[in-house]
Length: 398
Ligand SMILES: [Zn+2]
Ligand SMILES: [Zn+2]
Ligand SMILES: [Zn+2]
Ligand SMILES: [Zn+2]
Ligand SMILES: [Zn+2]
Image 1: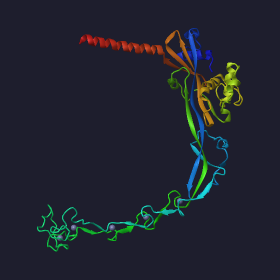
Image 2: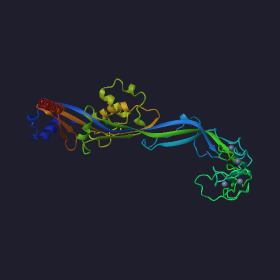
Image 3: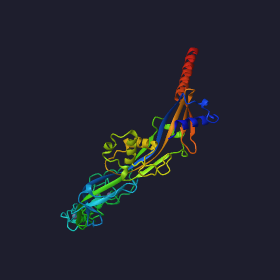
Image 4: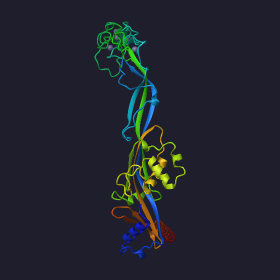
């Protein structure tokens, strides 16, 4: 973290003041606030374990699946990568496998319901004639064989020639296709009145769906363990607007945390462990508890990565992340991967319309000058006044 002197010197340099010209930007009248930017993600691997009855038609060898006695206690190592894609592990409760013969069928087959096991079904012996359907098959006897006194008229728009009726013997009165009969022998059963059952194709039995025609099935108690990553995106700017991230870039002196492992879990009694400590000690313990060791080469970190006293920045990162680090139901692993940067915001009584943001960077910090929010509001207010005045004038003119 930069000292107040470093920050003021950076602003003076940014103003182009020669050397460290205190007069151009005196310490008196300057107000410095520090703001930590933290961005990245906390990825948790979250696990659910469920138990249910599994069923498999036919036979099945389950010996390749792991067995358990108490699913909740079955040990599964934490994933190497908490962000790994969703995975499903299936297990078998020890002693639960039951291979059975199907009791509602015979070797996988059962009587056909459609034909009641007979193999054939009823069929009509005759079908209506397609030539005269809905019209007269014979103008003289209507298919009865008894000639009427007067022949009926030909149906309207009929063009086909009429032939001699086989039933009543009259000439040129009958439909050419059925010759007065009005119907034809059924083509499916050839007039026998029975046809092969389409469901069992004549066999009288069908495959039993339940056992998939095998006559056997297997049931067991199955445990299913599903693991999937849950990502919590972090983007905090501690008092600065979110656009503050836009004032920075990759080349700035970001600190980085990338931690995976058991010690990334805060112990349940973390609060007790922290009680009574000083503010710094609290943050230090928390940083240890949350696994927020500075990555090697982190700016400001002069001590080795393991078991270190974190820099003030890192302590604040730990404090910022703490509300997000509670253990979630089913959490089995987590990865904390964030970058952080402490910006200084400087205002000065002599420069009321400007805000100077000092961004740590090597070899020297850089300064971003932004318009004072107060000035921005004033400009916006002025724009509204001009608009109101313009509307008022235009009303007066009309
Ligand atoms: Zn049948
Ligand atoms: Zn006839
Ligand atoms: Zn006909
Ligand atoms: Zn038929
Ligand atoms: Zn069956």
